[in-house]
Image (tube, rainbow, N blue to C red; front, side, top):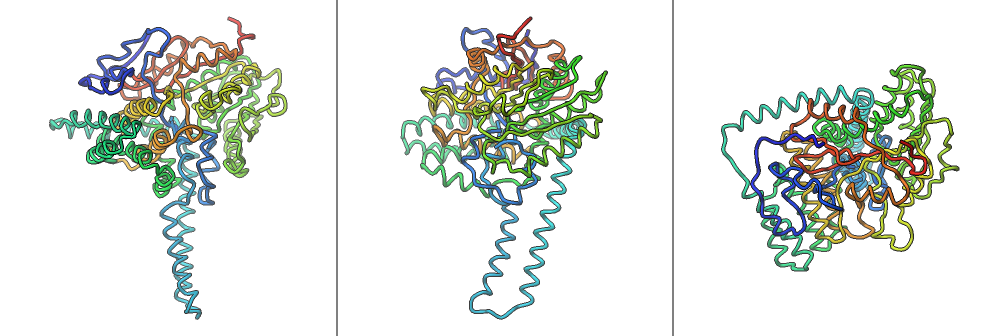
Length: 582
């Protein structure tokens, strides 16, 4: 059975299908929601990936430079390399890591001014100038004060999300609902339609991608000029989408990938702004909330009657879901359990320094202590995921409930498109999970495929991002500063990489859920049926608290979530096939 909320308004069918052979654009239209729900051998839903996530990707650090000391606070809690995003989708942490590692732009200006003023007195004027020295001291103190204030704000946000994520989310949703209702009342009397422009811009984007793929540079430049005239980072969803995509098209057209990537350095948000953008996304969109509920509820059911829990988490995230889990374990009936978390982080030590690992552990231990859990252990493995050794690295005990978790992370692993002869890292990691014999392997994927060519990847990216931008437009006011960070910086970095780069330089290689199902089964994993009580909980959460066009549905043994008929994320549970029973 499929449960879905439908939009009251309708959209006129667009002519994009003529430009996009093989892609059913109609699946995104409310009048055709879930229309092809039973086609053979193919995924029926047009699917795309976000954020976040975006953001959770080991390879993304290959594109980045080392971070500065100013980024220490965020680095202490970000668990992986993204982008962005996918939370997006892979949450938003990943997206942030896609962005070039540079100092905060505003602070750089202050520091540069200090340097310039200081160096200007080192030539002809060698005489000591006390006024200049005092000005330098004042400027330095201003920089330090700014950094201290931002660090305090960052810590407050992290503590709030770690300890009171649900309450914070509910308060934020109430404020957003009021703001969007006021906006709706103000616009109710206006009859302004941009439908023709929306259709044209989307068609122009695809036509421009076709021209770029065909090396028709003259036509591509003409189309880019038209698109830019209708693009705006503060306009409606389609205008913002166009603004986001033109950067990638221009980079590919000009062969200036590195230069344009470098240009984005000054657009990187401050640590505080990024965390506020993540908090806004978590509040406005149900995707991460549903993923966390699905994960924690599945683990709680596996822990019934058990006293020891070991979580192996691929890709280190903020840890918000584990804080909620510790709270639930502390309040369950019976004895308090022992909890151990093994976080498998990015292989490069510089991407996850010791200070960050210690801070993650400190926050978890603080939560466990506050909730009254008697025993909590935290261990981190810093190596390539395919090189993780079960016996030497994981220290698995026979009497513990073993849970393996992946939330939007495995799309960062190389697949057959890069490894032609040997098993791909993606298959090696899945085979290792099977050999762990976990009580449950929880998988969350961004339902989006990059395809085998630039043009097919661009089309998938376009329809995916259109759904995400529509989601943000319906739930967050257009004047929101942090919505701009989500769209143009976080999602924009994902789009830039997917559109402008090829081969090993692609940070993400997501697959649709049916592709993951076949891949998991090939290595010997068995999919578990969905639990009715879990489905009921997440449906109730979405129906009561979120926009009516979010939906939750089931397809076989997959829990699907998305927007207006387009599936964006999928969740499932697995065990090793040779130990499966029932």
